[in-house]
Amino acid sequence: MREYITLAELPAGKRARIIGIHGGHRARLRLYSMGIREGIEIKKLSGLFHRGPSIIEVGNAQIAIGFGIARRILVEVLE
Image (cartoon, rainbow, N blue to C red; front, side, top):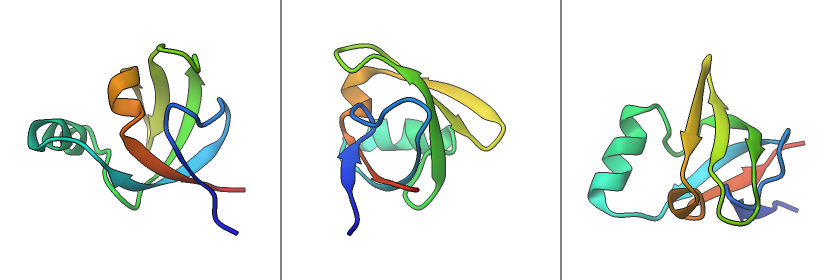
């Protein structure tokens, strides 16, 4: 069974695939410009569950995502 959660809820050290981004046009464009889009695999390196930024690995880059945006990114947890 597939498990879908937000990026903010994803535990550190886990890999996931981005399923959807629920945000405005500007937020989506900004994420797209950083290589964050539906279908790509990411790894969450660190993050605080309540209100902290999430640091993710996208390819060879490490990107910090604020809590407000991280809770609008839906991911599928990978084994």
